[in-house]
Length: 171
Length: 193
Ligand SMILES: [Zn+2]
Image (tube, rainbow over the protein chains, first blue to last red):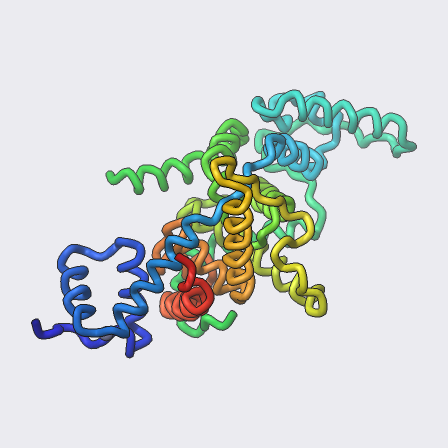
């Protein structure tokens, strides 16, 4: 049968075909066309076979189990980084940082924080202001945190803009 | 609505609830994305402790950015964008640190020794461990951005467009990264059956 495609192994742009073929993502007609080409093309047969082997080798690569205290550590870290003055949480529980799933950990951290605050010489807390309606937006962030938040949000916003063709694949 | 579209909408919806102060929604997002994210990071850095540390950083950043969150892009893409960024930086820093110290690549410090497969004989298990070490060495030869592209393509089953967004480059650049990465992997791993 006449091969209706140019040889993908001789063209960099053809490399996509080998990936789709190994991943089983080709449509039936695409696969039939590709396989009929491979009947006569030893180079494509070799690359396709090698790609399939790489695929199955990668499939067999195990990943370790996730630590059972991963969530606890994360919640403790979030609680610590929120740096919310402890009296604000006590006086305005509606706006307090709360994680029902990590309540014991959060409670332990809060207790520890309170103990540390009480044992450490500490300037008197500023008079508590009544929480405004937009209290959830009231965050105490240091400049580094603000900068990092902006970076992360920039990443989100850039996702909506088309990726620049100027960006190259240099690694 | 397709299942995928519903799923995307659900993530964005959960994140909007997190923005409003609903921490249960954050727990749901964490539950859903924890495993794929940590596994992605583990495959990137090949070190369990570091992968979990970086995953914590990703979720922490998501949480801290919640107040200004707008559902302008797929949540997963944003998640992997932050994760890739952190992992690539970690690998580059480490590469610089370890430029003179690359002898023990099969078992970097902190990496968990793989749990033995108890169905195998001792000899079979040794062969298995040697093969796994060879695969890891091959992956470690990939430059960080190529590695990230392969991991998202192979294990997260992300398309070229989504990988491009996660890596902040063009789709053609992603194809080029994947082409070069798989070329390296074929050369190093294709002899393995
Ligand atoms: Zn051919």
